Amino acid sequence: MPAKGKKKGRGKSRGKKQKKPEVDILSPAAMLNLYYIAHNVADCLQLRGFRWPGAAKTKKGKGKR
Image (cartoon, rainbow, N blue to C red; front, side, top):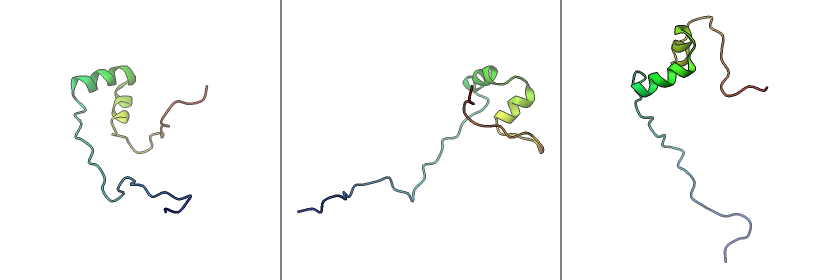
């Protein structure tokens, strides 16, 4: 008879990390997305991960309204 309360189950293995697929940031789909979210060249580069020293840090997600 199993003990009450605690149940053993299989969880996700913590040792393995899935490799992220290589993404082409210059693909037509990515460029269309960038067209809608970036307002200028500096904004475009910052959104793609090319930040410069002294740039203001951006918050992810929607802010409170």
